[in-house]
Image 1 (spheres, rainbow, N blue to C red):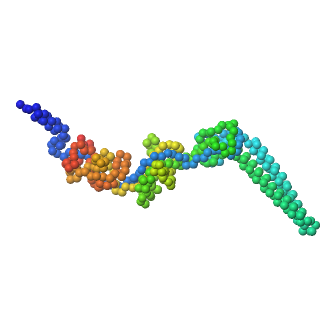
Image 2 (tube, rainbow, N blue to C red):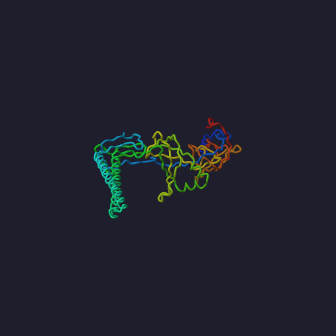
Length: 370
């Protein structure tokens, strides 16, 4: 008769044996898959969030007052510098130019007469038939007439400028937005509300932020500074797609935001098709340095201990050995390891549950791992 406690022990032993892998039950090495580590140089990048900004923005405002008679552009269209955009009623400005021209003609006639009289007064004085007072008065009158002519010409020039400004032109080349006024509206010189806004969308800026601590870490060496300055930065759009053109670091704000400890960096990107629009949220993969002789490992091959330190299992002399590693960065679904793995090491990628450190293993193709 088998005692109940003995029967329970037999059942537990049977269950434990059935749970072990077949190879372990037979005492043979457990099958694992592994990859052979190869070293190469990997660029280290930092993914930074940012917003698109137009490289140039100009607000269109009137420089003279009047009624808008006509809008001369299509909203959302490309415009060139100097292109007419609005026409202000110019009747009063045409009249002002005509009056200024008449004033110039009158001032010219007065000046010519003053020149003649001054010449005659000088000649009479030289011939001792005229007084010095008359000569001096004539010369002063000539100078006053010259000044009056200059003032009239300046007034004419100002009137012609105001007349020209009744045609409001594009200050820059770019894409013009929606019109903020309509035909028949009264506008005033230097008004605070813009009639429209023009944005230059090729190239565009991407302003990103990075902590001052990271900037110090990456720019502490000449190699890091050169990599940041000359490296091409990929742009990731909101739908997680990669933008066709790569950009470069253009400038950095020479100050640290006291409340956040961040520095604003400005990237420049070509935008010939106007895909990038101001205000869009994007992410920039900015090159920071180059990891020399690094090894790329699948993220599933790297484990962590209770303190969070990363390590991997390798096959050494047919047995499992544990190696601590240093992770520099990620690249897709891989970790870039710069320390702990040597070229040629066999890094275990699957089959962890069938073995342990120090246990014998057999490397099999990925299709044969169970």
